[in-house]
Image: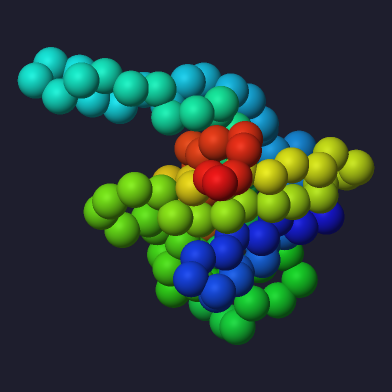
Length: 121
């Protein structure tokens, strides 16, 4: 039960809180106005939550630094997201990743991504 985010050969694997994995489509439209609008392939988007800790990554817990390293830089999506959670296998290519930290006594991080179903050939 894990999801791996890989960029430039570096991988971070997280264990989502049970029941928080959401997968879906939702077209990733870009451009418009002066820039011609385009649809960025067949969408493969999702989100999940993980527990944040101040220690080194432990069972189902991840440090803020580790989670913040998942935030996509400016530019095109460059993460490969793959996982197997409760028998549900998925892959998302060229994904843009965002991380939101929330909570008071127990901090959680919501990780969301927008990518495409097929690898670029």
